[in-house]
Length: 401
Image (tube, rainbow, N blue to C red; front, side, top):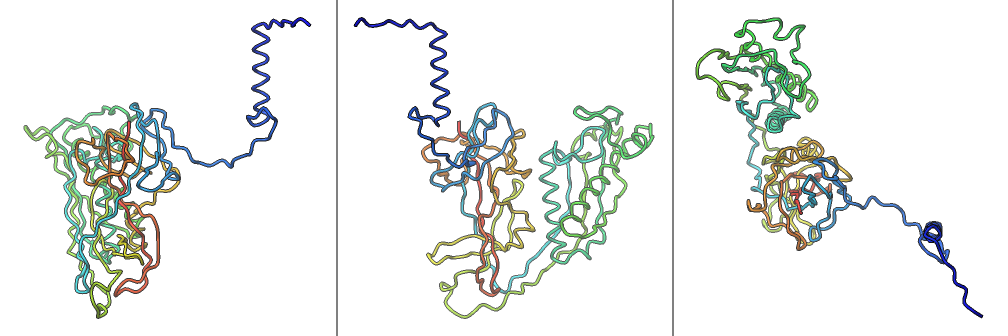
């Protein structure tokens, strides 16, 4: 019997292809009709920033340090991949039973990039001035530590004073803002004389800074801090008195040194190498800066040593746990996670302070560290009994092409 030739048009072929694809879809990708096993959906993909400078980091992907996970991809116009490296925290020195904790509050001269003010404006805009946010956070942290150690009643003469340089103040609204933010019925409270307008800037900026500082301290400690606003220095029209030196805020705590007695019990007699968990001063990193706090060296049953602080102290310091998807952004050369400053992004050539495990991949930039905690545990501490501690790690973030 002669073969029958069937001629298919382009439309016929297209129809057949569509039919096969539909059949595959219904059968779960199999032409045999076998039902495809449904796999539970997991949030196991790197966050895609799609070329933007903000997005999330998916910490659910964190594995071991030997195989760092890609927390985010397509980061920024360069299309970086971000991975995280955790480094063991640092022990500074043992704390003996004889040592007391010394807490001081220094005078702050807030100037230059540490001032969070746009031209002719009086309220602090920390979102637009990340360096100013870092300085402010440091001030808050130190006041909170002083107050929590019992120093609140000693803060009876805290003063703040602003200054304005020789530049002429105007009614111009700075770029990025819709209007002047003066908290009065009229700009500069109705003043039109340039000298008085300049005095207004000096005084109001200090007053508004104090208001934000008092509010933040109240929220963290419950303490009502009183700050006296002194008349500001006014350099309007004075030749040569322009710039950072003449445009600043001075915060003076005027607080005596606070000595917090060490209440640890006397050391249990015995060989020193038999002691496992002892008090230590530890390093931690926050807002791009390094600090020291009371903590502990904790040794597990295998002899591995860990850096830790009490969970109570960790909560006061605001040390984060990186978990789930957390918002992040690059602003200028600064890197932020969940609104926290991690630090300034550095090129690889700047020689990072630690050796990163990169799984054979070459990174271009790095930033960090920022101290985070990875676990809580009740441990027996020499001289203090059972303490719930948080294990600390210093996190670095690497940017790969």
